[in-house]
Image (cartoon, rainbow, N blue to C red; front, side, top):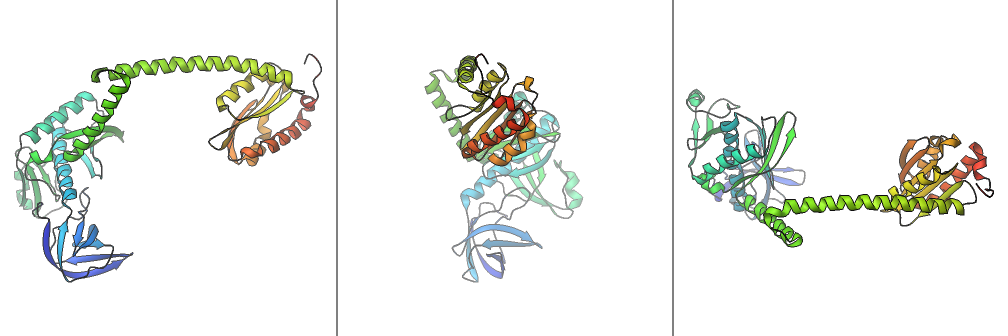
Length: 398
């Protein structure tokens, strides 16, 4: 039960071939199997990588991607991974007890991930003040460098210690105690002192069911997280030419400027669309206007189509290409009394896409930009049946 032991000698008791891997059972091991929210150790047996460790029928099985070459083996634990898990797991104990001490909030679940870990806590909401208080208390315990003790107690003596949560099984219980602060029934690996956990930092939280899930990092993970975010801040300082405390204000200013600029562009685009609509109506020989644009956004062709149908008894078919897909707008002046939904299935089939809308305005997106000419022909056939006057050549003044 020494988490710092990373090398050992053992005898192979059994080999279990399964799904392209070999499960090795030893007479003794220092490998920690996946359990209690903590991932398994990795390492090697006789030089062969151990890719997973599981427990089946009270047997610890070491999974290898190739056969173990010997009956007597030397096992070696991946120490950086082991110590990382020790930091995260002990950090979780400290964090969970901090939540309980300050808010009487229980930990409902724990997951030790490859990059971040998480706890689901029985609180209804979280804000910056809660985070600051919990982090301050948790890191106070770290900085005090308290002893982390591991011992076994029989079931009848468990009531003598203030366990944070009752054990899930009876019999001899393994207790992990953060000296005078937290008592947990736990089978995981932990360092001997809280100072080895390093900084504990909550980096994200979200609502889950009626509770809050908090993601956190400890030790080396916290250092990497700080280094990344500090690099981002330095880059923002350089680009915005401001001090650290002025970044938020500078971003707000840029966001407001961008919002105003987009509004101006939208207004100018609508004005331009009105001029273009008039030009296209003058150029069109009938009241059916169809065109495929190579450099327009779906929003722009929609504004252009609306400008035309509001100016007279027109039917419009416009298309554009965005990221390899065709975007279509079909529109008809309400005075024509057309229900464009009648032709909707035909459009969807031709462009192999999807779309819909109102009887006078439909929008589509599909996979076949090259089918625009065929689509135009089908719309003309539809109009010839339903509203042939739209296809008649305009006379002067129309």
